[in-house]
Amino acid sequence: MRAERRSDASGTLQAALAHHQAGDLSQAESLYQQVLLTEPRHPVALHYSGILAHQRGNHALAVDLIGRSLAIRADDAEAHFNLGTIFQQQGDLRAAVRCYRNALRINPDAAEAHINLGNTLKDLGEADQALACYRRAVSIRPEDAAAHFNFGNLCWDQGNPGEAAAHYRSALRIRPEFAEAHNNLGNALKDLGDTGEALACYRKALAIRPDYAEAHFNLGNVLRDKGDVSGASACYRIALSIRPDYADAYSNVLFLHAYHGSLDPQDYLALARGWERACVPERERQAARERVFQPRPLRGRRLRLGYVSGDFRTHAVSYFVEQLFAHHDRTRIELFAYSTCAERDAVTGRLQALVEHWVPSAGAPDAALRDRIEADGIDVLVDLSGHTGHNRLGVFARRAAPVQAHYLGYFASTGLTEMDYWIGDETLTPPETDAHYSERIWRLPRVWVAYEGKADAPAPARRPAADGAIWVGGFNHLGKLTPATLALWARVLGALPQARLLLKTKALAEPANCRRILDAITALGISSDRIELRDIRLTPDWSSHMACYDNLDIALDPVGYTGGTTTCDALWMGVPVVTLMGDRMASRMTASMFRALGHEEWIARSEGEYIQKVLDLARDAERRSAL
Image (tube, rainbow, N blue to C red; front, top):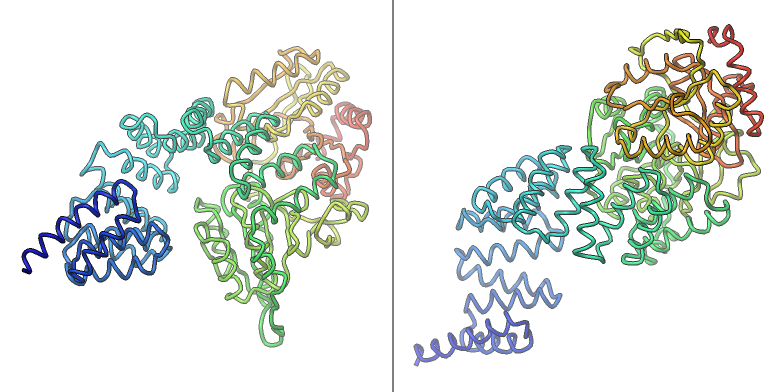
């Protein structure tokens, strides 16, 4: 009789598995239950009932059923693997690691288990172990596109885009229609400086998957860096139409408008206020509004000051942050730094040495990082990113500290309800601009930044050009070389026949960008033999970059979004800068520095005055030499 029941159960189980595989979950569930009524300890029926429960969203039941199956048949590698997948998807990464390792102990050649274990270890920050898993998966199944893809992802995360690209190409050789691999290959190629091929990769990904929001976003980033503002904006908006809560895409739309001043300040602010509504769930915004922090008197302790940034590395922001960190009064302030970018370099090490508490936070969800910051007892939390890359505005929107402020890294309002202050100064953020911000402006008494060049900077060594030419120009980001800026600079060259224009920026390593800039300037009536576009690869380190300022007599500040780091670098090398002060923060950075330095004579209020100030400096070689 028992053998007969087993035979019936076996047939019922096979039917259940067939229905399950066909996607008929209701019929499969009914048949699994029939098996378990007959044999309550049937490990396969328990196992697959657990998978079915997981597919229906009942994760607790799934864990229970698969756990009961493993209690009966502990050597079932597939059950360990599936239980690990459930734990991984639910965020219980340590439990997932245990399950995958159990599966691999039973079946060491299970490539998929090596891949999933690698993914989980990567999310836990254990990159070396994750690499070993991917390497093993590729050795077991060299024709497994997913193994190469995941291997490539980790290589890219570790700052090795060349090796990442090789693995993505291997994945695409196996699966040519692998949209995610095309997208990620584009990211790697962009990091390697091949933006033309990166564009082709993103477009291939979108041809395969038109609703791929991340590929639209990445395509927008490359177009933005090439100066195609309208094309970039269109890409970001398509990404947002697919994923309305895509925070990075929304931030990039705001960044573009703030960068180019393409919206009235009040329209920009209205758009910025919409970021948190789109990207932070209402229940979490409500919790932030209701959150009450218990008073923590400062008697007997130091104020806990936290900085959150994705730019604790070689980046313009770090040039100003380093001196800030170095000069905080440690008898009164306990310093915390939350680094939201996994990339590290020598600058990261220097910054880390200046703070007491360094918290790597690149992989932490916003809610988890908010909880960590609150647990650290931070009194004042400062955002250094705004709507730029690797920002964690979602942490601030959830209210992580009693006082929250934005400083330095962005050039417009964040739009956040929970951002209390925006730190500026009288010139950068004059009272008449208060209505441009959702935050209250906190004005520093002199100037809003601190800059000090490196001790190993080359000494200024400007030598007059042999042909008597006056060299003007700048080393700003390509995105700042807008039509308005180039038009004004062309007028300078027209008024100063002996002048030549020198431009140097990273994007000029690409011939297409050089052609576009040359075409734009020559179309304004300036001969191409008066223009020199310099490839940044000719100045591979900071000292050689700074030495390039010896080739300039006068630096020209861009219009609309002025220099920050480039202005400071030019002054450090003894090169005067002429700026046109506008009515928004982004157009007043250089003016703020000049007022603090006592050089208001370099601040123009009109284009005509800008040109005249360049002419005055060009005619006064003695004054330039005195700098």
